[in-house]
Image (tube, rainbow, N blue to C red; front, side, top):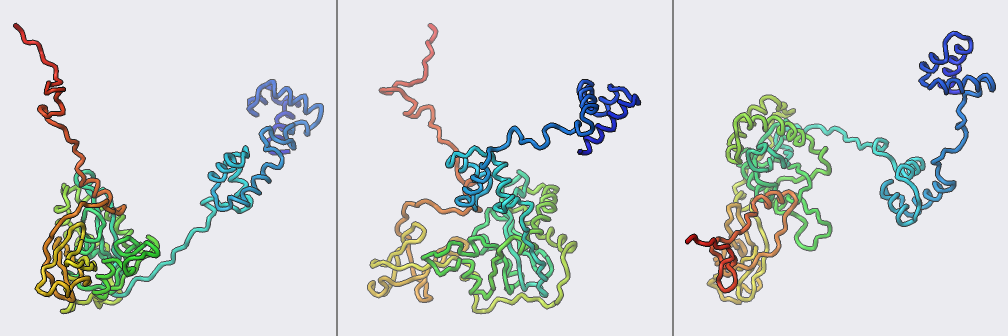
Amino acid sequence: MSDKDLSRYEELQKAHEKRQTLAQTAAILGLSTRQVKRLSKRLKREGPSGLISRKVGKPGNHRLPTGLKELALGLIRDHYTDFGPTLAQEYLSEKDRLPISISTVRNVMVEHRIWLPKKHRRRRIFQLRPRRPREGELIQLDGSEHEWFEGRGPYCTLLSFIDDATSKILLLKFVKSENLLDYLEVMSEYIERYGRPQALYPDKHAVFRVNREGALSGNGMTEFGRAMKELDIQLICANTPQAKGRVERRHRDLQDRLIKAMRLEKIATLEEANAFLSSFIDDFNKRFAKPPQDTTNAHRPILPTQSLDRILCLKTRRQLSKNLTLQYKNVIYQIISERASYAMRKASVEVLEFRDGRISIEYKGNVLKAVPYHQMQARAEEVSAKELMEKLQNKNTTKYRPGRGHPWKSGPRGFSRRPVLASRS
């Protein structure tokens, strides 16, 4: 007997001994008086075993047909071992014509260890990594796309440079999107202010890493990676967000403190925000920066042979045609050379696009005189996911509406379609 049956037996015994009425017993057990009378008669006739439910030991009315679970288990093991319960049930019901519910499929898969619920899966443990001992030895950088102005200004991205040794914010910059040119511009500001760090620790964004396996073109290195190699700065791409947790946690703090500080200052543009960041960084670092283990600064000065303007730019190889022309970004450039024309045919030249938009074409270190000759029709533009919002915001969506006197609004043979009001005589 269950605890429920035992409590019923005790209360019914009191009723039989006239210590309480059947109505009182019904109120205590939460049953109707008629049900208590039936249980009382069954107790007198069959004894305590008569209070046990008649459903015990009998199959349920909604029990699955015999062999259905075994059939579903066999199909899952043969065809759907790497499926989730919902997807497996869809194929079992639609393809295999098996009348089975999602909960049953889930129970079968959990019982036979084919699929584990999320709470039972083994969580990945991220071990703590000690800080680098010196400032400038490892700089974590990342971009945070967020509604920084709370609707007062444009939707933008904050680029952050966080020192691993001290958790100090070294540089912040608001930009329209997380793209290569803005990273090169901010990197130039950083090096001019602090010098060259030992290593950078970003994520696997396309700016820092070629994510397409087996790419046929290029040398497997992005333009940012090429620039860092020329500056002798090691580039380490993190596998997970937890690996660069210092910059991720700083973004969490900035999305709280920086947003509220700009709200109080009524800042609504990128220019005002970037001007405000200097004072905010100083106050933030005074509160939360940690002292380094080694006071020696690991930043290195720029070498005399290194030109930031020439290194932190876009470099592309092109081959000249027979008539000394090349195409770059849908523009054909004509090379003006004092040499004989055949001397530079099929020559490989380097096209440099500087951050301010200037184009320079060089051959063996010498700048060639080039004239834009013809601009071709632009093809479909490739945009990364993090630059999509900026492109959509800059797109002019104003619909053209012709004026009242436009021919489109005129009827046949020049008659206007507008109704003419009859003049009063």
